[in-house]
Amino acid sequence: MLLDPHQSRLALRTALEHRFALLAVNADSPSAVYDVLEAARRCDAPVIIETSLWQLQGRSFGAGDAALGLARYLADLAVLAGSERFAGVPVLFHTDHVKGPVTVPLLTAAVRGLAIDFGGRTALLAPSTVSLDSSELSEEENLRILRLLADAAEEAGRPLTLEVEAGVDDGITPLETARDLIGGIERTHPGRVWLWAPGVGTRHGLDGGEMPAFDPQAVASHRELAGDLTGRPIGIALHGSSGLPETALGEAVAAGVTKVNWSSESLLLRAQAARDYYRGQGDQLEKGRPRFKTTAMDNGLQSFIAERYLPAVEARIRILGGAGRARLVREALAVLPA
Ligand SMILES: [Zn+2]
Image (cartoon, rainbow, N blue to C red; front, side, top):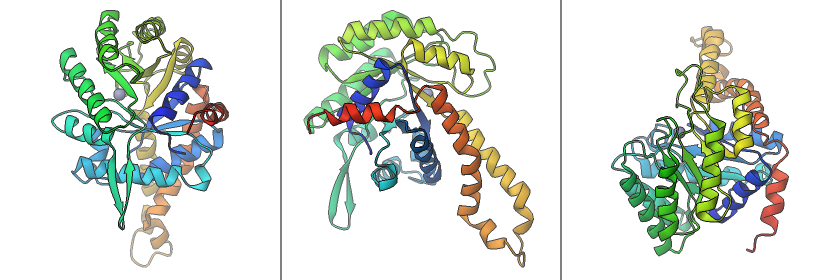
């Protein structure tokens, strides 16, 4: 089941109350999306599928056109998450790193809801939760765009659930920044923010090696302050988790992280599996070889990757305490008025 912005708040709140985090996988192909949902189903865990601008513009979705990419991504995920197999899996769709000139038009359209035409019938699809990449923005610009998105959603009569981000790669974010950003958006547009992504000493990518700068106390302080500023439970979104050891992930969740982004390691696992597939079976890719066709088919490669990838996703979900927690989210959703 694909959660709407209201339902997503309940899922995030449930995670904070029960101290687990939702794995948020930056999935860059339809088969990666399927594999993540399948891993979540096997663990009975809620899960987040997220995309950055590069996926929306990538070959599998928009082929250069981010708006088309977002529509295709959402439509594919809506069909998949709504299918019988995944009916019991709470799935959130989140816009991850979106930056540059496309940010405002793309995200404004997204929060208003994308009208997708299915042979004369129109479906309005929107992300469950929204964030933007603030790495190249000043605090004022970040706040201005967040308010613009909140206004666009309000004008369209649509709910909006935000993750606010600030300098996630720049060391520990000062608490003063939380007061400016979270306090600022809450003053003009109360009730929208449900995730806060300050820098807590992690870095994106896999080349950072050890991350001695990661500070669970910073997670706790920011979580507490965001809660004080808004008067509701706000979990912390952790960026740059790929390089963190298991113990640090556990500490992060205990301190109040409710969303753990996973991109670099996930990409690497899938790419390495693809490399091994072609290394191992590449000799079949010649005319006259008996298994030429099954080896050449997308399904051959993707099934091989899935076999390697699924256990890794499941392990990640378990580390974050997400296994068996879909039930709690389903129970919370059941009491939400329609
Ligand atoms: Zn990130």
